[in-house]
Length: 212
Image 1 (spheres, rainbow, N blue to C red):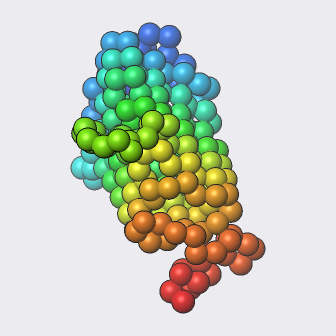
Image 2 (image 1 turned 180 degrees about the vertical axis):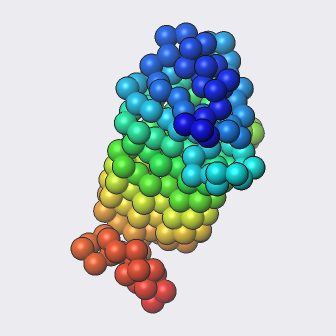
C-alpha cells in the first residue's frame, strides 16, 4: 500500500467512465488515458510491479481514442514495461504476468490467455506501424496467445501470430508464424524444436535440450 501512487489510483479507478478494472498503479507509473478509453472485465491490474522499494524504475501505460482493455483475474505489468493501446485497439489479459522492460503495442487486438508468463524484455507488436507496398499483405488478425504459455526473455512476437496452449517460446526467438499447442519453438524465425512433455516442463531440462 505504501508503494501505491494515490493520485493515479484515483485517476484510473474513479475518472474512467464505467470502469470495471481494479487498477493498482505503483509509484513510477506514467499514464496517458484518453477520455473514451474502455476498461472491462472482473480483474485487478498492478502497474510497475516488482520494483524495488526505493528504486526509481518507471513504466508507461498509454491509451488512445476508442481503445479497450479487458482484465480478468490478477494481472501485472512489471517495472520498466511500456504498454500502448492505439486507437481502436483491444488488449485482453487473463491472469497475465508481464515481466520487467517488456513492451506491448496493440493497434488491432492482442489476447493473452490464462496463466501465461511473459519474461523480461519481450516485445509484442500486432502491427507493422508503417505502410508496406505489396500485393501479399495479409489481413491483420491480431495476436492470440493461449493458456499456460511460457515466453522467454527477449522474445519478439509479431502480427497475425496465434500461439497454442502450453507452448514454450525459447529466449531470443522471433515469432512470425503460428505456434501449435504443446511445442517448444526457438530461433529467428522461430521453428519447432520438440514437443513439451513431463521432462521439458522443467526449465533446466528445456535449456539442456535447446543446447543439443
